[in-house]
Image (cartoon, rainbow, N blue to C red):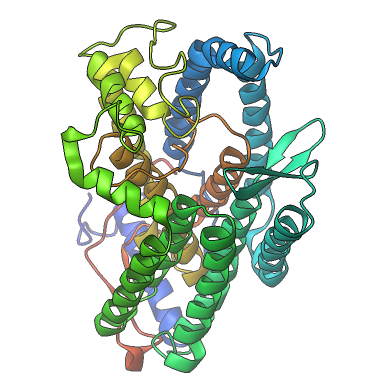
Length: 448
């Protein structure tokens, strides 16, 4: 019954899907937008499942090492933090993230796209205001600065807010609409109307995030969003390689103009010779000690030694090493598998979406989360120079968690509009408006 030549049995699911596909292709060839004819179906709940699992693991590890972190801060700065301070703060951030996810899922994506410029300008305005209050006016009660970098707003009663996350979300929504419009008109490879405007936009974002806020990790994540969207947009290989070369040159300049980044590269080149006695190698050496001491099954919840003041940023950027110490090799493998399944599930949506805007947003969210995971894990295991970046859903902190949750809420909404056949966009600029459909890839009978 699954064959197209099954005799036209009325209840044949494969026949129904094939008929629907042929009708949609016929309408598309005569210029009728078939997106409005696409019935909404259930969202992809696997995306939600993997996310919830990771968030729960994050709450467990914050609960385990929160008291140790509070004791370290109390002894170092004379504060009076309770043992439950960090887990309560993280639980509050999770509640805010759930709210952001629900709002992003419920609010019409077309409504967001119509207001994409306003969302983008809000991100830039927040970054500019931070520079003004922190770097120029030195209002430390409003702008929190550390180690010469101002990256957070201080919001009484809520904690801190990092405007770079707002900017990342704004870039995601704005570029989806901008690049989709260029794709429809065959101008995705046009230097003056597409490439140069995007380069200027990326340069402006890099100025605020990498140069003024001195946050290379977040800057790399921001670039990863844009690069992922460019890949899906059908850009010519030659143009892509030229942009990649430009990014590599810009990255090299960013490194050699900052002494602390040069030190991190030199520490990375030392490999296992970096030790806790060396100031530049102290952080990565303790991260490796934490992962190695976890063994196969870990030392158990609440038994971490490195979280007791030895490993810097144990509750934030270095949480992966603490996870390795607590849950061991098996625990780290499980966490990485969860990230892999989540990212693969997101990536699988792209070739089953018809609207270019939707495909670009999903690609951008994939690049956003993947860059955080890859950079954080690689830095903590010594596979790349150390840089500060959160591990999604697991690191302590609210702003990153809230905006990644919002981005996933948008993806969750988009997953309601997938089709059953794999859609392949033509990369030839002269063939715009034509689509080739590859081998059908059917979903299960139940809506996803």
